[in-house]
Length: 92
Length: 391
Image (cartoon, rainbow over all chains, first blue to last red; front, side, top):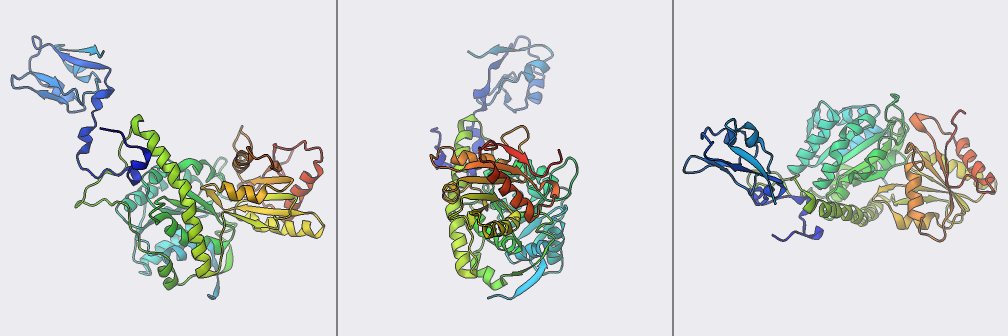
């Protein structure tokens, strides 16, 4: 999406397209990303509960993964995971 | 010509706002603004005007309430002073960034500490960079006129910015003055209905005041700066129209005997009329003295200011606030900056005066002129001094 110039901004930067916040991929802020080790995961879902972005989702096989479009890499899921199944690794 | 009436200026400001078909007001009373809050509240309670008067628990809430109401498309008004304005500070740039045409009367008063309720400009100066149109008045008639004009300026489609009218506390707000109050019909003719650029309504959902990161923040600041700068044209048009309708002309920089003056004084607000008496006294003694009065603080009228002061040999800038540890008074540093690139400019002096309500009689203005005229070796050029301070 091309960035607007200052002349193209609507007055007061009013956003008139409801739900357009989903187009803003806050995942670009991330410096670390969570990696699940499904051998250790007990499918308790505490990562899903604690994720402040609501971007941790359960997959069909019952394990969890983060939507990297929105995951900011805060590491809360990793911190809360008591079986230590989530490791934070540096983004390249 | 309308009939001249006598009334306290703060009451008259509330009356004038009451003529403007406001939809809502949220005003927290604070000395010396309280009479505006009280009288406007009376007008609503008595059914004189059809508006909501929202009683709020603080000035932070007052500004928040008018932001919300203006966003919903209501013509919104507030008023404050001193600590109240400081408490609003956080929200002022939000109102301007959201391009909400809120109008506010400020009864200018010294900022604590120490606690002081009297007049100077230390409350408005910290708000300088908040993106509001900021205008000063010199007497009660101007306070009324600009309070009405403010809505037309703010709501113009090419402006859509909040406007504050600076009215010196007590010196103006508590004076009973004679003036002409426009009629309801005249104001209706002058002021068109408010057409907001967007409104908060469930039928057409929008987001106002959304988040923006480094990829957009610079563009948004640039757009705001351009909006404020280009508001000047609309302000001048509104003043032209006002002069035609009511016979009272307003300029960004008002002048008095300054055209051929060798030494000029610059004032803002109510001190202008006292300084004018000093000019008369000096002229009677053969001193080529003149006065310029800065009305339009933001947007700053660079061209008009240059024209008004450029030809003088010496310029005395008076300030009713101080930038502690800085270049002197805030008006002084702006004028110096505005004239920096000019090959032809006056030697400049700065007096900080009238702080916390200290009286400045005509003789003090004459004293400032005499002191600057006596500085034949230009030793005090570009310096500032607290006028009348006890050493």
